[in-house]
Image 1: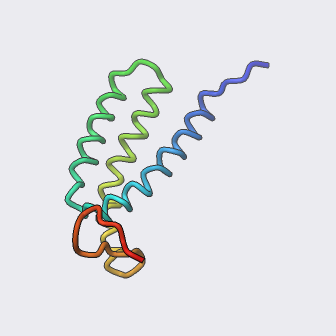
Image 2: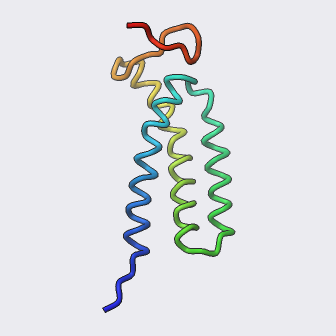
Image 3: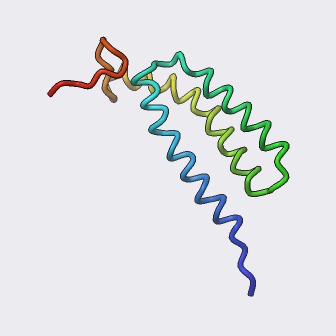
Length: 103
């Protein structure tokens, strides 16, 4: 019996990529606001195009997942702003961008 790991690798990597984008969106909204949505757009377009030109099936698939996650993150960035407005997540205090909070 021969085992093929491509499917399980794609599944695990997809889970990790999506899981990685969740905190990235939260941190981006906290420190930079929604004005960085275009970064996710460019990243999504670039990785989408890359997935079309890469011949290796596994790499092409993971690039496509990265592209979809990047594009999905644009909507999540604006949704995160709404979550902050509702008080579900903390709002960054005014001041320096990377200022540490004093205890």
